Length: 140
Image 1 (spheres, one colour):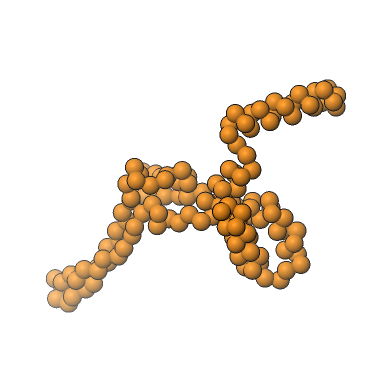
Image 2 (cartoon, rainbow, N blue to C red):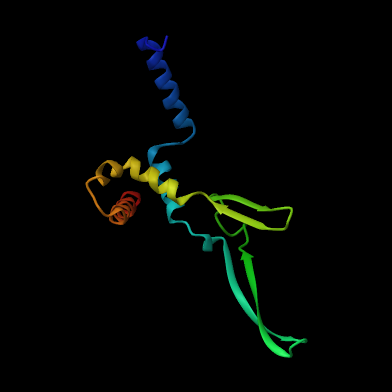
């Protein structure tokens, strides 16, 4: 049935219509992937270590205690679309994950055909830098 030209043509039109209705195109996808690659966890939270002097009552020596402080930024003031997970486990452990930058960068590299060209290059870091530069030019 799928080998008939009129069925293939009909399905292609339906697919095209679905993409238009979803306002989805290659430029949109590439921009979203680039946003994942360029995003940074500091856009969502701040953290610091505070050191405090504490007197050890047994030895009467001064010890230094460190406290790690994580402050989440207000979700009403930031773009949260790139957050994959925010949770607190039963043990009280806080978990915060962004979408994977490596996967997004790899998909962008595939789209621009870099991995076929990579076999000719010895330095992968140079290839990735080139990808980021070409993405910057393409998105602007």
